[in-house]
Length: 196
Image 1: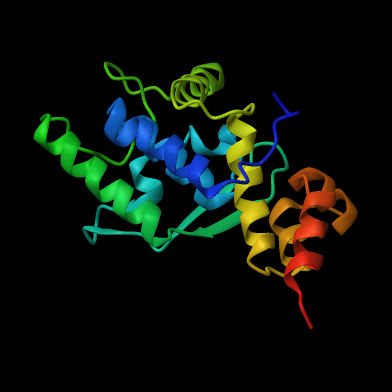
Image 2: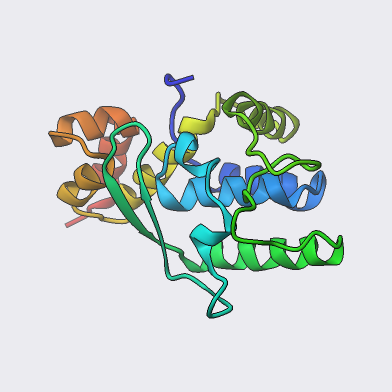
């Protein structure tokens, strides 16, 4: 699964998200994809998220940040809950409320339908594979693709290499470039579009 590439084409990102939002509605799966694309977190850090991680039940408001300790590295991460994540969470909360399934602090966001237990990494991979296949996205997408997609598009928008290295905990930008799949096509695009 680690050989997967970032999703480079914004249209493919839209197809992936729209599959579980409109074509084959499943808001839990949609929220998982939105969180993955917008946080650069590993799937092993997304699946254990509870509603308490994103919602302050004492104040009755959504938190500004997701604060966690990465499972793989043990390092602390503080990630802004951006507008796309917030909108998806609010809509998911509304859907759950309409289904008489209220949220509570210990409830996993990406949980099984009939029990409060996060889905497995294998199930998350199958969810992405189904959306990829049914949407006719022409390349391999795995859970790790979501993490890589965030960094790839951040880099394309001009994010400083040092910041990307910090987000991914890489020791050099060479590692980050390989990780994000920055290749000759990207260099060609740059030379083609810088017309001085």
